[in-house]
Length: 162
Ligand SMILES: [Cu+2]
Image 1 (cartoon, rainbow, N blue to C red):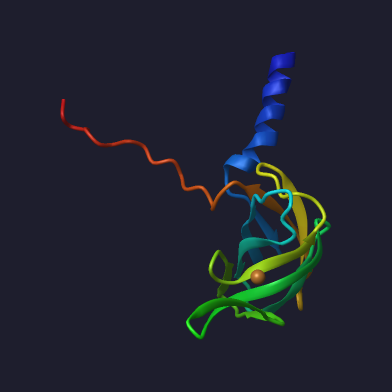
Image 2: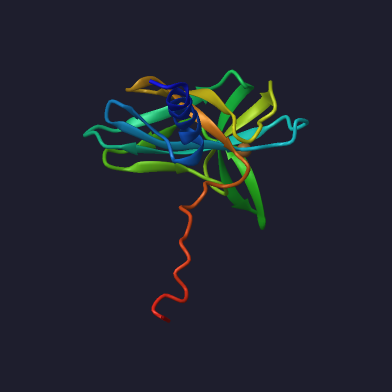
């Protein structure tokens, strides 16, 4: 195998998680695309978003999470209160059989407190989710400059004009 071939394989394997959605399976739980928004180095808090689908026949419950990049992780939801959008902590989140639970901007999120390193776009960090039944599940969080990238839209305008 030539050096350039080795190099192209390496480049492919190391770049592809950044360019595509990534997912994790733990028993009958399916965890889709954990990501976090890149933040300035001075930021002390951040948030992780992901989707957990329960393909099993029994409910499970997400009890919490932790990560080496934060001193503490709390599960939060956004609520409307007195005309304001506020965050509040939730103790645990059940996921019924056949249901999924989405953590996304403006809704549930995994709040990171006391960040121990800057969240730099293009980097990754591990996060361990604690489930009542499935136990501890480790996933990798992609740090993105912005929200989950959409598939690039091909330009179709002008088709059929010629
Ligand atoms: Cu929060």
